[in-house]
Image (cartoon, rainbow, N blue to C red; front, side, top):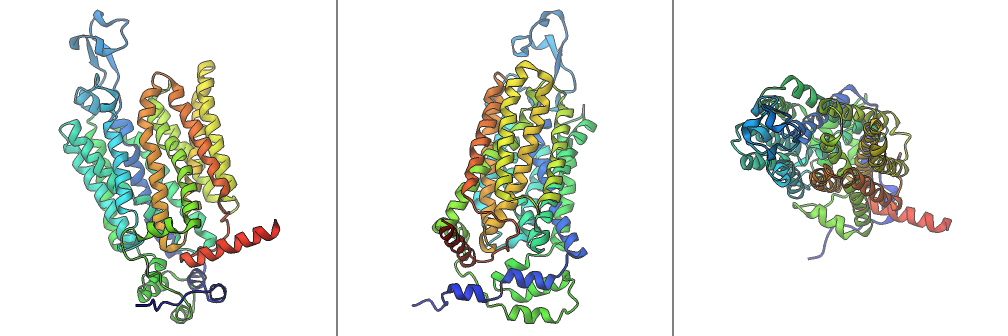
Length: 509
């Protein structure tokens, strides 16, 4: 049976009204309804940050002291009799002290953190395209937050390292698509003029979530590590209820799924246009071809691989994401190896995300995506390597260089996600960002191993961090610039842009 779907020609793509242009014309100026939706969706990043870095405190190596003269001059407590030393605080303040893991191997101690990142990888691979194919952005966000919050609540009942690690895996599995769905859903509700700023709201929320952890841990010092999970799980469950009943689905996704009436209804509810009756007429005039290939779980990934231009973009941006993820997730975990107070160092690192978010929010409209991303990855790499060199000469500069390296990685992280959502059309956008997030997390998987090795030699942590992010950042050079470009909705539309850009380059040459 022949395919009855007409083939789009270049003249068709040039003459027909764009779905994105029609949506922006109908939505009008940035309204309070759009702002409320964007903020509500972006709050998911707050809880995402808490679960990402919670192990910095719950899995921390507690401090100890001697109880008699037999341990004086000995720095390794594993070489001492059990009755010759004691923890400075109660044993239940950390999983290390509660479950007597002080002499366990670094592999065992790092198992929960590694399990979390492995869960993120598994969740991203299995759930990657559900938001593009069947569930949609809103439902995927709700289910991800619910799974993360419930597993976080169940973690307080862990009785040993193995149950704890399994629950951390489930926590990471659920958390895997939260940031992806949040940034895609929030940016698809607004036009291109506000797209970058709305996308950066999530980064602000992530920073606030990161900042909340040292505050919660400091208030909870001396108490059980289980309370930290309790204090972070309950608000997340309440947030899931808000998402279920107050958040609207992306009209772009609804439209390409053939659910035009639902899309128009949502646009009407957030539109600032005075002539609401013209909305349906505007959409009826759109000569838009629904993507019929996006029908199952992995069809989006398949089309990304089959299209050479899409595969080239995805490969380059994922390699860059790998390098950024190694530094972004690794540096906070490595703070314990620095000669600095843990609560203060985590706070300073969290605070360094604030200027990174501010730069993204206020300057995203002026920053060229490619050159900015390249610059921040190189800066992070240089400062990370210098952190090792200067730490041996001038220790007081070490924390400053670490903060600059982490700040640059945070800014690169934000730019990477916004750049990715502009590189790919609506029909595969969530899947593409999910794959890039997978690359970020994959870089994080190696971080605990490097952090453990770096306790003996800082170059094995901060040095490798710097080299990897610097080299991986070079892969963005071959990507197109996307600042101030109209978001595409179909693969045909984006492919036409790619061919037009290549033809223009050839004429210049």
